[in-house]
Structures are given as C-alpha cells and as structure tokens.
Length: 417
Image (cartoon, rainbow, N blue to C red; front, side, top):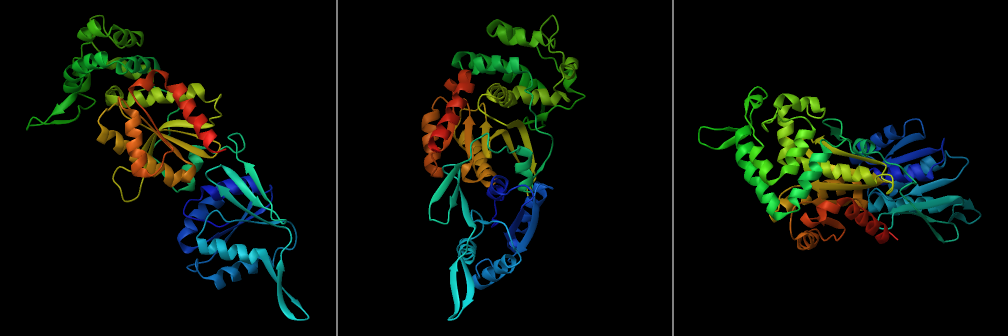
C-alpha cells in the first residue's frame, strides 16, 4: 500500500481488499510517516499492519525495488496485492515493476518472469470504483456503493491528524423556529421586515458599543439578561415568528424576550449562543435538520454540524458548517444568510479547499445562501476552481432544500457511473 499525503484512499482500499487477519504493508516516505502511523492506528486490531519506510528515497528506483523485494522474499504464502493509488509517481512505477516481475536464475543467468498471484489495484475517484488488474490483463471494476463501506466523520478527521475543538452536533437547535425563518428569508418583503426589527431592536441592543461608536462583540453573560428585547413590533408583520418564540415559552405576556428561559430550552449553554444562532447559525441548523430527514433514504451514514477544527499555525483553525458521508465520500456544506457575492464565494472557496484536502477528488461541496442568482454564482465559482462538481442553493431553493440535496446526491451518483 503506497501511502501519500491523503491517507483516505489507503484506508478505503485496505478495508475493501484485505481479508480479516491479513497484513497491510504501508510503504511510506519520511514525509508521510505521520499518515502511515495514523492509518495503522485507525485499523486497530482488524489487520496486521507493518510500516515500510523508503526514507527520503521516494524517487530512487533502486532503493524502492530493494525495500519491496526484501519484504517479498519474506512472504511465503497467500496472495499479494499492490494498491498504487497513493505515493509519488516514481513509487507507483517502480513498485509496480518490482511486483510484476520476479528475478530468477536459470542456465543462462538472471531472467525475469511475471509473478503469479499478484493483484494490482487502484482507486478511481471519478467513478468511485476499485479497479483490479488480473493476470490475464483484464480489468475488473468493483463499485464502492454507499452501503459498501461506512466512514465516520470522526475517523476521517483522525486520518488527517485533525483535532475537533468540540463534539459535533447532530440535533438541530430550535428547528421549528429555523423553519419559520426560512419562510421569511425566502420572501424578499418579509426578510426586509425581519431585518428592520432585528438590526435595530435585537442586534444593536445586544452588542457592545465602543467609545468611537463602533460596534464590538456581543454583551457578556451578566449584561445580556438585562437587555430589553421586545417582539411586539415584529408581531405586527411576522406573527408566525413570534408564535414560535411563544411556543418555546421564551416570551413574556408583553412579548419581551425571557433571557432567563433560554438555557431551559435545552440547547443553549450561554446567552450569546442564542445571539449567534439568531444572527445566522439558524440556517446551519435548518440544513442539519433537512439532512437528518433524508439520512436513511439516501444512505447517509454520518452527519453533523459545527466541526470546529484546530489547525497548527492558525489562530482560529477552520470549521465545516455541515458535513455528511455516504460510503467513504465526503459532502461538505457551507452556509450563509448573506446575498453578497464576495462573501458567498469566500465561504464556498474555504469549504472547497478543506473538503478536497480531506476527502480527495471524491469530495463534494455545496453552498447554501440567500443569493437570488445561485446559477450564475455557481458558474463563476466553478470556472475559477475548474471544477463543475459544486452546488449552490439560493433563496428559491431554501423551502425545498431536502429535495434539492437529494437531487445533488442523485446527480453525483449519475456522474460516477
């Protein structure tokens, strides 16, 4: 198994091709020792795992052949497979050559003949298949269907040596209220009415104001409960929103927000978390709830929200808003209530780069936003990234988002055929 910078293909191939109790020889370089070590840890006791180092000789034909031949001579029975999805091109070429031919001695001296019982394979990211080259030069393609291999998001992060800052959320916060907010944001008139109230009545009241009249962070946990927030004006234009607040019993009779009751709702540990939720995180929770609804029917094995990841060399790391896996394929969704193209593009770019880094070419990325021109936004971003396999869901897609995500999944499956 040739180990490259992305250990995911190695994980997939080993899980699919190696029999239980078999041995995986992870051929790595000095630069990919960490990846090989994490792979070994991920397999636990399921397989025997041995690391084989090429040190700094990843492009040295003689050294590659020497290391692999040394191990081949110690294997006396069973089938041997080479998966050359990972590693450098030189590693692939010289490893393949070493396993394909064996050196024997006959009357004329050293000759080379094709080895028997050697299986060569690689992972095709475009078609989601394991390709196997047989001894009779035929290629067998094994489809890696979503129910063939289950990959947990936690395992994917661990393979890349990434540490989650907290436990991902699988239960949406205030899903009923998020549903009502989606109805508001899907209507241009209603969303204007919402922001008229939100900006002046909630946002400005709940934020600190600096001496230079600039706005600071949310007020602290001591001051927020003393902030008077009335939903009386909002009730005249968007009564359905107020009804959702009342259903959760977080309003007084005079439509004043009951800060003291927020934590009793069961999903906010701090008052500022509710502020952040109302400021836009509600969309992430709505998306999570939509994915949860279709998880079983679409063979979505693992999903979650709020993947805050520590990243060495950065202050804040990075975060996947919402992510799920089907089989070993990663689907990452970036969410924003913004309509500005620059911000939407920035959110999608970051999600795309991180998803490809972790999930390889098979990873799929989408943006859920409030743009009225999602198609042109997608075309612009796809052209910049030279990748057509991204999705952008705009304002018109919000109310029917679960079905739109299903269409995205179906299209992905169709492209892989």
